[in-house]
Length: 184
Ligand SMILES: [Fe+2]
Ligand SMILES: [Fe+2]
Image 1: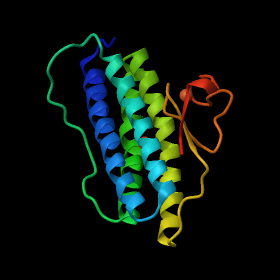
Image 2 (image 1 turned 90 degrees about the vertical axis):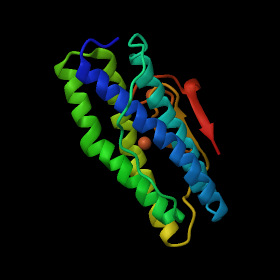
Image 3 (image 1 turned 30 degrees about the vertical axis):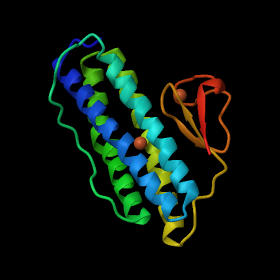
């Protein structure tokens, strides 16, 4: 439920941005696999799911605001090699972490929009981790190496992303281990 037009606009734009990130990461996962970076492919696919979780959360905050909208949303375009695609991923995540979500979150706080506040907070915290993992992956790929991981776990409530083992309790949203989805 949303009462203020500005917060509603930001939720729709964030939904658009997350939707594109979801698809873009699936496309870049295929490129990574073709180049022999199996784990970077897994990371892109797992994080694609985290972006779906964010889009789903934003969409559901707006579930009572039915209607047809044209949605302006930023999105990184282009398909290159995996090092280049990871730069696109880093740039997109950093835009969300440094610009987009802090502004959206502050607006939701100012307008006392509880649902939007939670949804933006979950996304902001998860994107910080994504930026870090994509940077580490890019460092590996620049040296011709794959990213070192056994599996990737995504919290299906907030999109929190962690390597190798899911925690008993999600550090962002408090959900239990059983809601984590595994990618390997
Ligand atoms: Fe992300
Ligand atoms: Fe979570």
